Length: 442
Image (cartoon, rainbow, N blue to C red):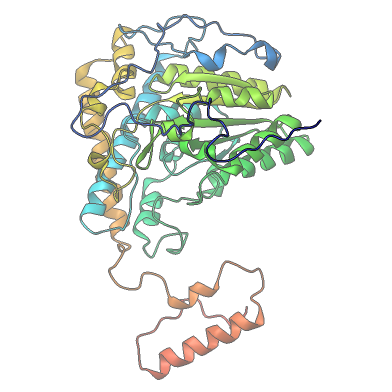
């Protein structure tokens, strides 16, 4: 005789433990002491450097350690030491100091009302500067919004960058991009987008096209650890792995994504570098405040890409020392002691100490260089402000809003432009037309 089991709220699962939802919690909140005990830091020089043609499935330990070159004495040790010349080291240090000075001036300019928005890279300079030095100038860069150091390392004009920040008359973007979202084709610097992670599939697609053409150039892209939760991240990893795209995918793990800590992106479960394993990619985890380690890892990944060994995912472990942007107050969500307690130190100070340990630098020359780059930035700011600043009048002729989207303006936009100009002129308002006359729709 068959029997049936009745199940209901009172009986089903009576012997099972109650389910519980895990909600990640930061190690320290405002008013509490900083706690970075959850970040294991191996000694510098202990991680082996595999050959660049090693199969990805033989590199499974690298995402769970930390590649470090500079030790506590400022000496470069271990197999990952790139053996850079003193000249290159000094050039990297200058670019990092210049980036920091640029950030400081533009941050203050925002506070003075000269622009609407700015994002500093304080504490993360090595991530972009060292990588730029490790790549060829012809390689294509697909940055996020905190890699201004890439442009500075490629010696791009500071005045041009400031024009974009001020959205002034000389802004090549004509005020259409949010400040700091540069676009520099001549420097191989792809347009920054405020939509998180879109640059990843763009970088992979560009790299695939480069390979399909039989070119020699590779691509590199950067995003924050929080953006690894975006679908674009996973789509890019799939295409990069399947087609062995010559691309370097950088994850900048600076511990905080706006106001949520890295645990909400999965940092409690594993490292961000380990995500590459599931896609069959070579993956590295690097001390992001060690310029030599960043250079060495990027160079290794670049050689791998150039020899058709496919993509590499690099996690840079660093710390965002300032707020997410000028619109953010980090004191509302994290311990005020964190920046000073960060165990991997300051990237600028560490590279400076290394040069001093080599006998190739000293405090006097460093102070002189700081003064030199600050004067350079002040001069650039004065020149940029001569073209206007945000909020002081109409910096771009109003009719330029119809330009730069279509190769040939469609009829409905031509009608709208003509109507706008007619109404403006009928109202007796000042001239708003571009200096170079053209027919509507031309």
